[in-house]
Every structure is written in C-alpha cells, then in structure tokens.
Image (tube, rainbow, N blue to C red; front, side, top):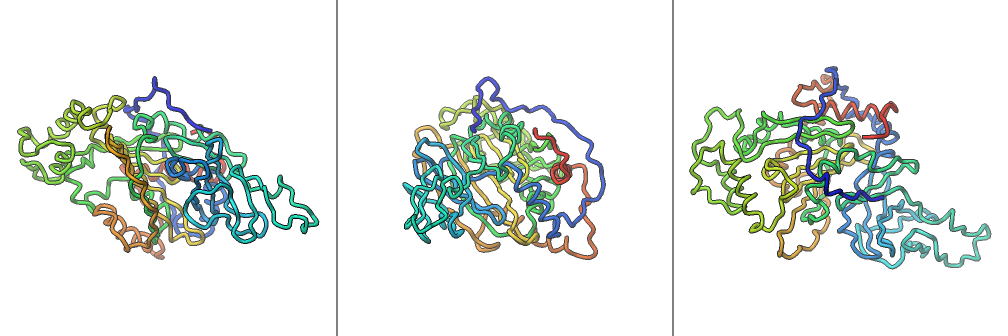
Length: 433
C-alpha cells in the first residue's frame, strides 16, 4: 500500500481550516499519570493506529532490515526481493526469541540465533533444523513470521498492529495533500536520536502543539518568530499551525532597528548579507522569501511547489497520534513520541532531522541511531530548554493538588488531540481522517 503524489494537486492548502467546537472542560490529569488509562491507550490507540516505522532510505536494498518498538512490541521491517517493504512481529514462533536484536542490517534470510529457524524475506518459514523431531510437524501457515498491514508515503514506512485496519490513506487523510509539496521522499535523514524522557508521551506532544510557552521557555525565539499571529487549523484527526519565521514577535516591547543576530544567521545561511539589508526589520521575512525564490537554482533547490510563505515559515503539523513535523522549504524536523512499555510517567522521544540535498551535492551517509537518557547529550538550545522543563511538568501532574489541564484558546491543538484520543478510546471516531 503506497500513496503516490499527484502533480495536479501538489500545492499545500494555505486557507484557514475548520474550528470545531471542543468545549472548555478540564482535561483530567489521569490521562497522563494513570496505568489504567495507559492500558486503554494501548488497546484503543497504539494497537489500532497507523504508526511510523522507518524511512525507506534505511532499507534501500533487498535484504535490508530495521527494527522498531512500540510499547512491548518489537517490529521487523524488511525489504523483500520484490522491493516491497514488509513489517513483521519480531518474534520467532519456535521459542519466542527475537529474530533480530540489532537496529538494522542486511541479511539474505531471517534466521533466529537461538536454534537457527530460518525465514525468507517474505516471512515464510523455510528451514527448521531437525524438523523430523517435531512429531506435531512445522506447518508454515502457522509458524511463519506474522506480517502486519504496512504502507509507504513520503519516503516513510508505516505499519498498523490491527490486522483489520482500514486503509492507511484514510487514516492519513489530509496529510499527503498538505505535505506532498515538500517532497519528503527526496530528503535525506541527517540525525536519528532517541531520548528516554521522564514524562508521558502526551506531555511531549503538548509542548510542541502550542506556542504559548515560547515567550517563557524560549525567549530567544521572540526575535525570529511571530508567536502571536499564528494560524491554527484543526482537521478530523490531525492539526497544524502556521508560524511566521524571520520576524520579531509583537510581544517584544521595543522592536529592534537592526537585524537581530538570530535572523542575521538565517540570512547568511542562504547567502544574504545582513549588513547590506537596508529595509526595516519587519520587511526581512518578505525579503528572504523573494531572495530564495529568485535564487533557488543557485541554491540548488526547486521551490516551484511551495508558496512564498513556505519558503521561510514553519508549517507545523501534528499527525495523530504521535508525529510532530516542523516543516520548512528544504528541511524538516520530525519528532516521534512513543509510550514507555509499563510506566505512564516515561516515554521515548525520537528526534529525526531531514534535509533536501542541493542539486549536484553529494548525498551524505545515513546517521547511526543513538539512544540515550535525558541529559546525556545536547539537542541544541531550544530542544534542551524543553527537555529540562518537561520532567517537572510530569512530576507536577502527579501532585495531589493538581486536577488537570486548564487549556486556553491558543492551546486548542491540545484539546483537539484529546478529542481525537477519546473518540478512539470510546469507539466513536470515524474510519476516515
């Protein structure tokens, strides 16, 4: 199952989206702290949703494989001889050993290291040592690797643990229409890190679904982002906001007369000289749009499918349930938020950076995957600021004094996510997106 982009409809819709009535009631803290609610999420969300598995560029050749985890499940994603990417439960049906222990590699067959039971690249059991010793037999239809529904879009491989899952394209809904213009399939992954965070997965999702905290946690960004005039669009499952970049926030009392250093750096990165800019600071954003449009060939990019705002702004998408995309003209920062196996107060935060390779430039090697605990490495100033704060949010949510989330209008992406979550848990969500 693959979604192919259609040239005629590649432009990203920029018009204001729906504003559904979401109410104003308190969001109970138990959704972030309760083991019982965590189990409901597994039963109704994680085991029923289309989830990101890997990049196709991670498995380009026949026999390439990667492993990924969601909850207690390990999945094995394999490129077959027919070049199809298949997803299997990563478990040998003999004694339960994981077929592959590592994060990735290449193999002509999939052989369990315990007793050398062997499967081909379609997951079919092809060899059992001393097979005659199994008096009950070794039926392939029962003992082959269990495949689950999978599909591809934008250079990504998705999977669904539900054998009766509806079509992936229905679940993604507006996503291809909105994001195909960025040509993710042509981007190259340049960073692949997993951090174990001491917070619920939704605590992390929430932090990136609002800009209300920018003025407090990220004051530096007030000199590069307009965190006030943000367009918020709420769709059936997914949502987005459009954040103007390379401009100064209206929250800044005294608007600078000179180019702020953070914007000057961005200008230099595309070949503009900040010292030669003679306009006012509020005019920089449009000047950068014009420069990138006029110099796209020199820069080695093709921006023909993007509108002018997309050349500088963050078209920030939340793909339910656990993907956050900071999307720019020639790069993208993706966060995958995964629940801990047993503890609602912990999660896995996957940070993956992507870049469009300028025409004529060599394609860099894929980065090694690195898994660390909170605080062991730096993710850069902005993400480090979030990393420091979120464990304290989670600890506060467990306080006897705290009842739940008191959400403002500008934080309504959080409320929208909770509506979608509870629709799934209560069995009320339609099968489309």
